[in-house]
Length: 374
Ligand code: SMG
Ligand code: MG
Image 1: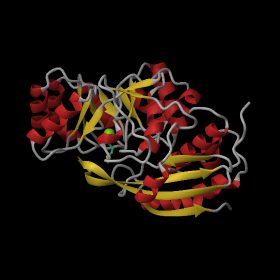
Image 2: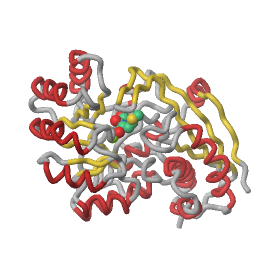
Image 3: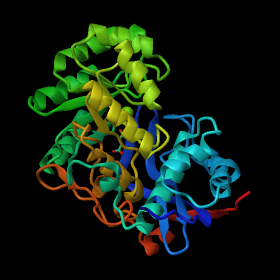
């Protein structure tokens, strides 16, 4: 038997952490990681969740200031209004009347799950049904100014043990760059991520990439276009992996049925929470579709959830779950470390197994606000 969580209040905290190096994608460049954290106050216990939304609505229609409002005005209040929370599944039920806002919902669910698990002396990975206590790590490499810089960065990651290297591509910085990296690293598992920057007229780009022995091509086309992804997939030997297009287990089922992808990138924020993420993993396992856990440059609070999900049995490929030092000079939590064999330990402590360090949180804090119930 588990105890319900007596959720008393919610607090939102926006943090800003400088990145060790700028992260450039087809969306633009980030030099600072801004994130909204949610603290769930359960009296004797508290829990933390991190929202994946970025400062601008480029990767997703959600963005930081919008999330702040959605949490304060609707989602937080609706969650508090329902009384004690019997288990984490209930968060999704209470918030189901709000359309969309998946990243905001996911942050609330994670904070409540953390507090509820702590109240019950349980660990997230175990609760979810983890199959392993270490996970396989890849790394996502931003678009670099020159090929030499890119190769230097990639070599640095390989020396640290990372098992798969993902290169961000954009129009004009694609085939030539990837071909050069492939020539320098003939045996490295390599993938590319276009973040939806291309159109069906760009088939020749993908046919050229198809010759380079990539593990996958991630989100080549518009996030709303499963049919065009299916057409493209039918012309390529390389597997397409969908990221932005998959917002739910329903989307995953549609994509697989249409043949729009052969691999899925699961991010708990993008799909509305860690429980929906697990449902996608369950579906993929039944269908024999390889999946992996993506990343949104999370601090240790969000990373803890990603790493717990990466330990599930259906997650069969290395994720974008990299070490804290790949992102931040100093993480908010105890650092996540990648061992020389390219694996990372799954947090085993109570709740998500990570907590923000109070002093660091204070140094990174930009603003905070309480959420009152209805
Ligand atoms: O967390 O290491 C990370 C970043 C992984 O490339 C990454 N994320 O499309 O998969 C993706 C991007 C989304 C973030 S763009 C700001
Ligand atoms: Mg992606």
